[in-house]
Image 1 (spheres, rainbow, N blue to C red):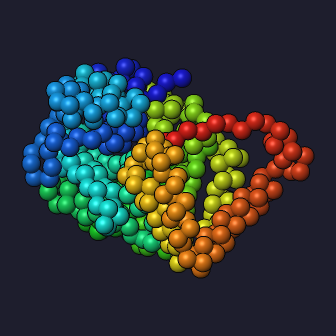
Image 2: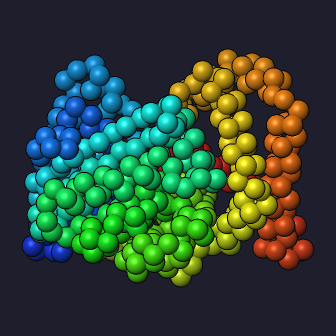
Image 3: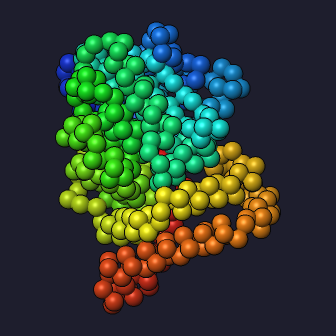
Length: 386
């Protein structure tokens, strides 16, 4: 079994002139979009830096702040940066227009950069959800409103990059970043849209039907390439008009969202025929749950849920977990302070989720098979970054 790190060992020495850009190259850039290049990568209008040079500076660990950034990288990212630094294929690619924004008031988390690939085209890569609660809140907001701030900014970012230079464009991202890539490509305007070669959506959620019915979305849909692992949850959310490719992951459950678990060949992915029954079951349950609520109910649920998390004092998912005993008291006090109508709304929403899950389970398994499934110990999932 091989992943993107193995791919860099196999083909990292080949230039794009020797081996054309392929979806695995795009996956690597989408993972690189999670790396915090603040203070290293140039912003819009500030020039360029090579990927190899930016990786070298980040890994140098010259200051306590830089060491903290490196120690906080996702598992595999440091190894990826080291491999890119020495890669004849990637090290000389030019990194430009790096943007990273976090706005609690606007409930917005957004980051993107653009890479000049060296074959005349540029790749615009959007970051997925980071570990901040602001980022997670914006993701949940997608359940009742479109566009969210990051989606608007994604389209503006793509238009601005297109206006700076001529030439073909590729757009991509992972998780929320994949959603932003598709949204930006759909709503960047016809002139910019006409220059887009393809959009790479790596296990990113879809959109409500009102979005997929828009002319801009319809125009770009044939150029969207969506990849999901066999037990995808995030990538199956909401609606997808485009077809998707199922990629084999070596992880279990939600951890299949981890790009380092996706299996690759020399120029593409190790593919399967379809997602598994567990993914289809969760997809049905979530869609039924969401459709059972009005947009106002969805907004209430999200606001109350993140109000509880905000009461803990945590700013990141990690802080919430590390301080759980301390945070539990604050959460309980906030829960007691919720007014009765909101408490009742939360209760009805959670009941709808429970009903949807039972209904999907009954559809997924015959009676006897369901009993056998219940006899199997549950797999343990851990947290993931999306």
